[in-house]
Amino acid sequence: MSSKNLDLSDPEHPKDLKPPYLKLYSLGSPNGQKISLYLKLLGIEDYYYRQLDIRTNIQKEPWFIAINPNGRVPTLSDVDSQGKQTILFETGAILLYLGEKYDQER
Image (cartoon, rainbow, N blue to C red; front, side, top):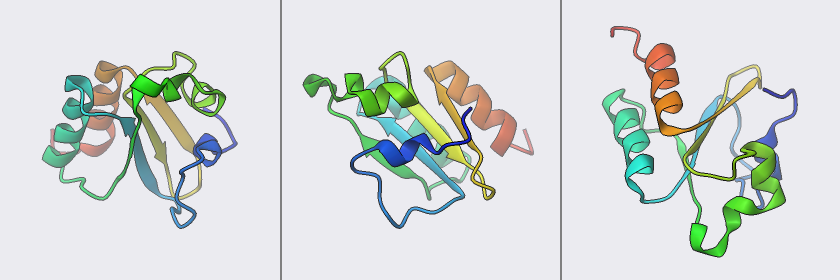
């Protein structure tokens, strides 16, 4: 976690995207789809989706490496109303986090 919002280094980060928000960096791969499907099952449809074309190696650019040092997708950024950012990567870790934080009824 960082006190600085690392999403702001994304050259395509929307200027009007204000906390709180979820931002999913992904593509149409099975692992990325798992995250999107789970968000939908949780009733979370208001999140920002940033598609990364890994064929261009965008995931290896310095701005993304600052977000995810592994340079891989999917990556989830969760910024709360206070501006505190939590960044997760690896599909299993993201799914566990979403379940713990957003599935209050279990």
